[in-house]
Image (cartoon, rainbow, N blue to C red):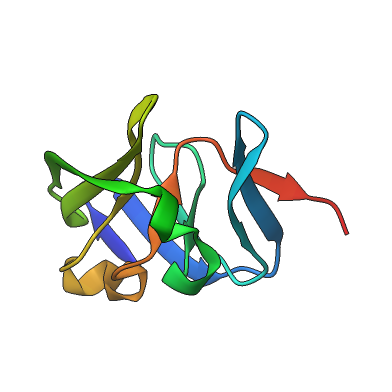
Length: 111
């Protein structure tokens, strides 16, 4: 956990089954997501690379910087730019998310 001036981030091993579907196509499905909770942000699921259909994604030139997590790289679908991101070299406090993929729209699948 990291906390800076009221900003907190936690990363925990989740047991939820989550998946990402776009236009009827399954992009990712995992029963071992990392659950990242960050002050002021929605819960995000970071999925192991083996659970993501990376062959469908194209690297994007987009990068962003988070003062708490580090620099993110992005991937796109032909009709969905910057749909997914990952932290190839995250800050030490969130090192677990290294190379895990995070999508904007992830659904939790009930048992």
